[in-house]
Length: 474
Image (cartoon, rainbow, N blue to C red):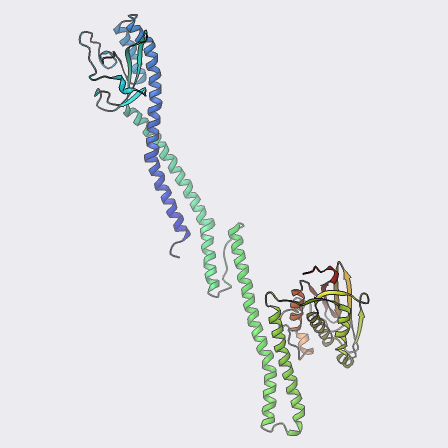
């Protein structure tokens, strides 16, 4: 993997960290300073207005002396940690908290013009070059009789605002650092809970793609990742079973084809080299024909099973009498039943019992089940065929009293080529495909087939069909 999800996540995390630092170092710092300046200006402006209404008016109305006003101004300046000035409109400094009172030769602010503050109650700068660094300056007019007599000016060093801002920015950096640590914890959890399991799942899928379907996925989790791992493991297990089944089928087909071909080849060579005399030809030609029929039957069954497994198989469904089909199918086994002295006992519901299904396929199902029952029934025994109607369905039962099926073999009887050890001794010509074909036909109809068997007692197969009058028109 050239670029993994984890690398992308790390890149995103680093970008987040860089942008976080940029935001704190620029935007947050600028916003913090601007907000502190605004707050400080509002605070100082309130004090300037208070001084204007008290000390300013008292001074200009001769209710207090310059010395007394200077004393109060110094107290305010010390409390606010600022420089306070009282100026007349021409820029003459009457009182300055940073300078002594000089009545004879008062200092002047050169170029003083309050119109420069138009639209704002404060300004930031050196205020007509009075300071060596930037100060926040607010001004409140002293008015008497609707005329401006002077101004209260309060100057606050911007370095103090910057110092406060630096403390707040440090807090922002700490918060960002905490956020980065928390996000790093999330990244670690993501690594352990998502990324590492995904890597193990990817490694497993690569092994499965390479053919190692038994590669284990070591993901122990109850969430979606664990469910995905379990699903992949189950898929691999089923694929492995399918691969084993495929090998088993190939082995069985090879075995079932090899035996008759070996017999045919052996007998023909014996006839060719004179080992079998001409007078014995009819006997061995019969054997060869039987083996040939066995090969034809096996081939036809393989083709039938392949067609039944084809997705989207089309069934030619019609309404027909299942009881009549059962009677006609049984009649084809008259010779086999007479040979083994087997009696057929029918217990059919009603004179007619219409179902909706593929007539040809259901005939094949009945033929396979009855043929199977005859093969594994004892001489002088009875085979029962029964139809019953329950819950808008027809149930067909074929029951013999033969050798039965071992308990461990019952779940396997519908597997392709499966033959129990008992059946191998009884059925020399069987292909092991009849019951597989039967199940595929019933399943194609959307119905079920079940088997009940007891070894030494007998076997019963039961399958269901839809009643004709319950089938929706298609």
